[in-house]
Amino acid sequence: MLARVYSCAVVGLEGVIVEVEVDFGQGIPKITVVGLPDAAVQESKERVYSAIKNAGLMYPRRALTVNLAPASVRKEGPAYDLPIALGVLVTTEQLAPEKLDKTLVLGELSLDGTVRHVRGVLPMAATARREGFTRLFCPEVDAAEAALIPGLEVIPVRSLTDLTAHLSGYAPIPPHPPVEVDDVEIAVQTDFRDIKGQEHVKRALEVAAAGGHNLIML
Image (tube, rainbow, N blue to C red; front, side):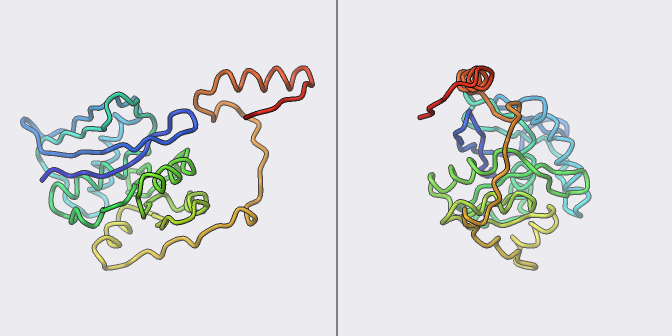
């Protein structure tokens, strides 16, 4: 069974929907990731294998191919671990594909199946709502950030085990309550290394700060 799970990439400040396809291939047991992945995405193969095994689930002893579409967008970071793992579980019929309808999935996996923080959750959640998704699975630590986006059901995921139990109906995870902007404590961000791209904007801010100039941003 060909599995399709939806995730998201961030290009600059905008999110781009990524379709994670998982299917059986030919040859010795292994997992191959294609679709312009960086080194962190390539390393997801080992994290996904260990997380599925340590969650007490079956990892197939067959060759698997993972395609991250569109291939023209570079995939960076470990946020695709969780969608790839769910794709493996769907293609091996351990999860029903309809359980992931209109759902966006984000999360890095530890070897024991714990779901870790990922960057860029807010623009990804905004993209999910804009593209018609109604539900978001994300790391528990990032759920409050995603819940700033209205009209989107945010499910905080602590581990792969918890998520499979939720999708199987054994132990539903309550959604994170919506978060109002007025309830958020604003933190001053001073480090440009966390900003993807936007080189001209960062240069302008540096010049303005260095010279004590005024600045208008549109």
